[in-house]
Length: 304
Image 1 (cartoon, rainbow, N blue to C red):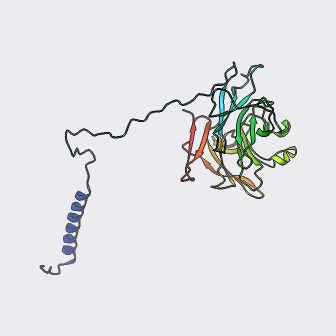
Image 2 (cartoon, rainbow, N blue to C red):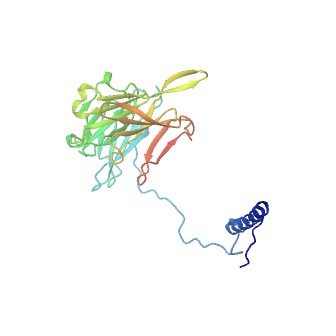
């Protein structure tokens, strides 16, 4: 290799600059990739997999002559015999006729023609959830804001389930109960509900006469012009996973925002807000679900 003689500072710097620029140009040239390059001209790809399609296996029809909307589908925790609970209600404000049926049903997938159990609440159910500890217990949130409980073992011979316990109307939500979850814990009797009245309520099935055990108002302060205005956000959906965190609850609101409520020993607060600055839905959030594998990520469904 030829030894380079030491040159004045200015000449040495110019030569080095030329070498570096030349090497950088070669490196960039090697890193370039034409993503539109056609490697095999005229070849048609062979699709080995079959096109994705779906097939209707069974249909569960509302047996009532007055048809209503399905507001919640809840799968029974036990998988030995597949059952699904379906609630029906008319959620349009002041659009419920006086003779609207109140029944909801539990269907057995082995017999889709007729419901296995008929739930007869005092007010139409908007949501329901099977207990994860005692799987025969059902919690149902009603249109009038109350929370009712049903026991599948205490039903009559005709398969009709009456409420075993119902919360007091004056201690319940002021709007329809849009979602309910059973909380993780040793007792298995604690629940959480949300409603468009702007509140999250925690309940204990053993202490319903005392009303909710905890309450959180869904309020947020917004800058409107030069003034800060506090608005109430109505809850329309919940997401809760006790394995991820027994104290954290995701709440979807009718304003399109998502809030994370944290229920600690002596304090309940909103510690995370999604969509307040950007990325909000333009209509109510109808469903939230965490990714079962990576539970820090969640999916929301709303507006269009």
